[in-house]
Image (cartoon, rainbow, N blue to C red):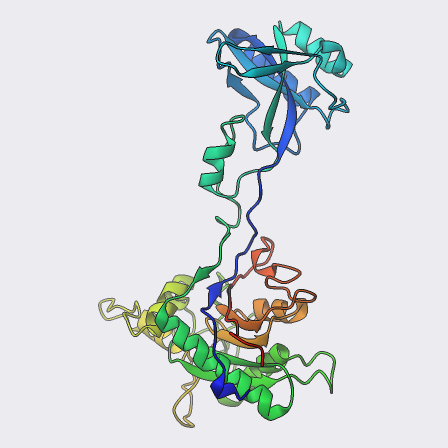
Length: 397
């Protein structure tokens, strides 16, 4: 099928995580008088820390007696206690079954703690074994045993495939079709196109060259092509500002002056906040809306930084201005369109290149790093992250 005849499915945002099902842990819970609460918490933390259940509150008010509090002594499997049938059970007036536990089934240290602090009863209670990913999960899971709600370290994860709007769909289809055409002309099954979403113009493109060199996957070749283009338009003597550097220095660690020396000039250094547009700015620019640049009362540096930072492709060969801010920093803010889901090597190359979005067409369950066998875009330890979209085909090529 010719690339121009290809029909695409609606593009969706690839979830950074899959939704976790509710899994429960069996807890040994004891009731104590309210007055021993502080001493009890210290003793429990020392005797039986809940290393894998830190999301659970250690103590709650007893639901059936306001004079008592209930505390988790341990998770039965963690304490080496058999999860066999409880030693006894009772049924309350409302029909709720309560499983009780004999004291001698607990480790000796917890038996002593129970006696020392005036324990009055032992029960078996189920609690969530994992921390909730979303507020909705928390509202449901905390009914078993109270959970401390914390926003995940890398933000609330994306758990569902979210479709894009019509304008974004057209933009994605246009450049995915370009990648398909490039692959077809090159006689390979994969190609990548790097695009500046502000101007909606291609920056670099490359077909897969792994048949000639094992590292020359389509993404790697496209990133290299973008780098070579930068070197042609912005000679090495000009600096580029790393938007992830708080010091405002260039990618090589210093800020050369206009004469190529290491002397710093006021026009070449720019605060971090003035030179790094947010993803929202990039999206608004793609949609033709407000780019977020404003008059700052005579100071044109901020406007120039925002406007020039990503002007990577001109309508014709023009001489770039000799300014650090006119040279882009790698692929910051750009979109990468690639036919096949990137592998781990290519996905990490896109992290280091600072792309804004990755759009792929064909999932790879074996080697794919962005939804296939891994979800690298959900990794907390990386110093940059990007959004990932899947633009599937309605029928195979």
